[in-house]
Length: 177
Image: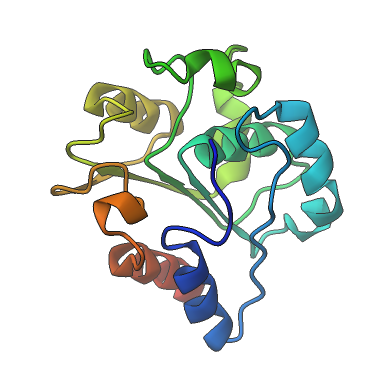
């Protein structure tokens, strides 16, 4: 929601993973301030061939809801999915109307679990946008544990997250295992 691949910890994580020889894509999606699911799916279409058994999908905030929608449509399982400060469903905040195309329809949780690989949820304990109980409900739906980040807020640059070592370590663990 209003984001870009050049903010938060995204460029740092991309650089760290590329240094280890991994291919990383961080697309810019259209109309970040007024996002529409169908437009984002069309923008992601050139990358769908990368969703194979060794792929890892990472979504932050609205990107988490988008990752869930990608997993519903995937044709084969991937290695792992990381949902960071993830939006899903109705969040009961002022952004709900802007995110409705991503969040209003029910999720196909069995298909998401089937295609998502090892599922991981990261949540800032005092996130101003996403209540902890929403994150805990998400973890039940995807059958994952939540990694609670003390004073993490929305796990973005505003909260001091221009680097995110805990996420990098978790991703590296999936790449090795």
